[in-house]
Length: 173
Image 1 (cartoon, helix red, strand yellow):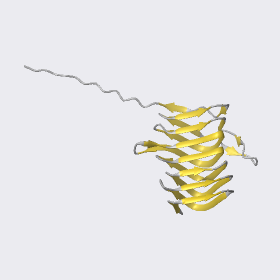
Image 2 (image 1 turned 90 degrees about the vertical axis):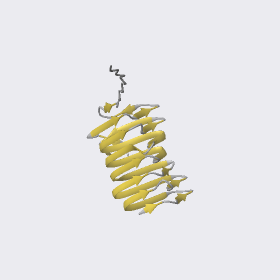
Image 3 (image 1 turned 180 degrees about the horizontal axis):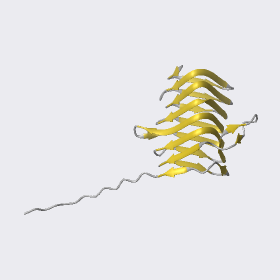
Image 4 (image 1 turned 135 degrees about the vertical axis):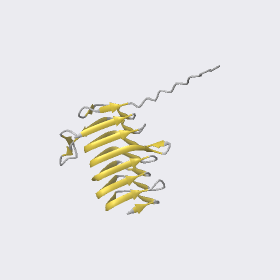
């Protein structure tokens, strides 16, 4: 399924697909609950938003202009990539809380994972959508994972890319 338009509702919006591609012009939003479940992958370069946003699947690629928001934002994926594409970096943000259940999380190249409240990164969700256990791998490479409240996760492997350039003038006679 590919969305390049507007899928919106004043109440709940729920989508289920094998693979969902939400393009740069695509918006999936609701005034209450936004729920997206994919069997394989969710590829987002557009906007996903809701009061309670719940996204589940095997793979989430949130790239470039991709923005995923929610007052309460819950993500459950085997693999989550939040990354730069072109000159834009993706954003995952919660206005109250962010809960991420993931085996392998990579946040890269100025991408942002942010919660204005609490942030939890772990291995799975319980029946009440509370993060439990430990994520298998959390890699933060030249990007930001921030919380305005409490945060808990397994140790994060953070790397900052630094490029050093030097110029040398050589004179010969």
